[in-house]
Figure 1 (tube, helix red, strand yellow):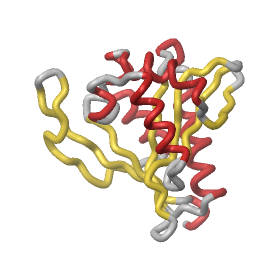
Figure 2 (cartoon, helix red, strand yellow):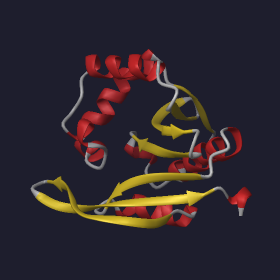
Figure 3 (cartoon, rainbow, N blue to C red):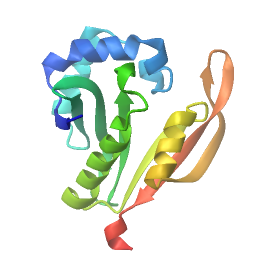
Figure 4 (cartoon, rainbow, N blue to C red):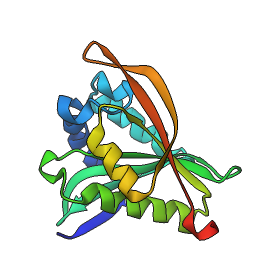
Length: 169
C-alpha cells in the first residue's frame, strides 16, 4: 500500500461532498459537516481555505486513489501550536493504518517544517477507534468537555488531546 499526500484542489470537492454526506463518515466531524454539505458549500470553503495562511489541507491517496483528508488548522505561529483535522472518507481504508500514517505525515509537517511546539485535536467520546489511534500515536488527553456534542439525540463528551514536539523534549 503506497500512501501519498497532495494539496487539495477543486477536483477533490465532489468526493469530499460524498464523504461528508455519508452518515457513518461524517458523524464524528464538526457540527458544520454533520449537518451535511453541498458542492457549493465546499467551493466556498476552498475559496476561503486558499486565502487562509492558518491552515493547510492535504488529500490522502492510497495507490493514487483519494481516500481522505488531513489538515493542520488554526496554525498559530506566535504560540507555536496547531490543530489537526483528519478524515478517512473511504471506509474500505478504515483500520488499515492509513490514519496512523496520516498522523505521522501531518505531525512531522507541523513539528519539523513549521516548528510547532504542540499539536492538538478534538475528538468525540463515541469515536473509540480514533481515540485508540491517537493514544497509540502518543496523544494525551488534556481536557474532557462533558456533554458538549449531541449525536443521535444523546449528549457525548468532546475530548481535547495533544502531542508535544518530541524534538523539544
